[in-house]
Length: 186
Image (tube, rainbow, N blue to C red; front, side, top):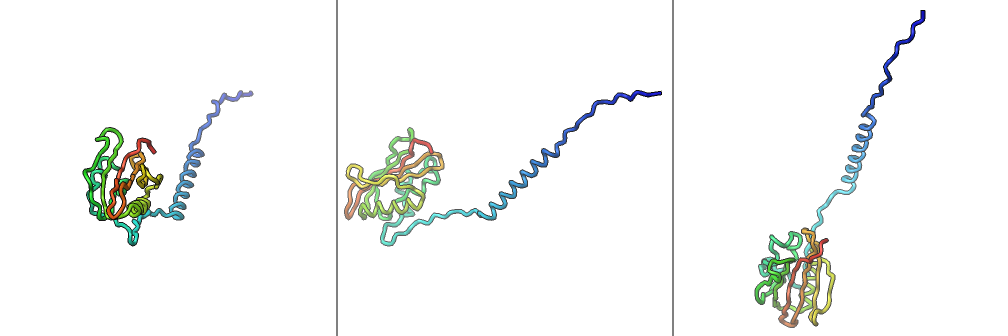
């Protein structure tokens, strides 16, 4: 007597997650390995800014509050405020002028006198602001007066400009410091 084979249910295939998981684990291990190699080969260092001291040149008046309104913590970014400086022996002529009175981009200027020549004043700002990461992007004569314009990207995503214009040079020089927020974003 011959028996017919019993019908069997169809074969079921199981999908294993292990091949996919092994690829993921391998990727994580490789990424960790590369990060470890990078940390060993390229240790992070914090760059330090050294403010230059020019022998015979003008020095920063570290205690001056003449430009305190121009370095307002509520408006001026933290990486821009260190550039708002004046040399020792600077005397203010008039009050700080906030040109736009809070409407639009920040714009602050103040007039000063000091017992230094135009070259020394402009050299002071070129050395000090250059060491603080400001880029000199324009130098020349505005209406016949020597002027320098410096630019730096602020942490508020805007460019900031510092301008120094010497209006009278001699034993006592008159000059203007201006800082403003450029309306174009970084």
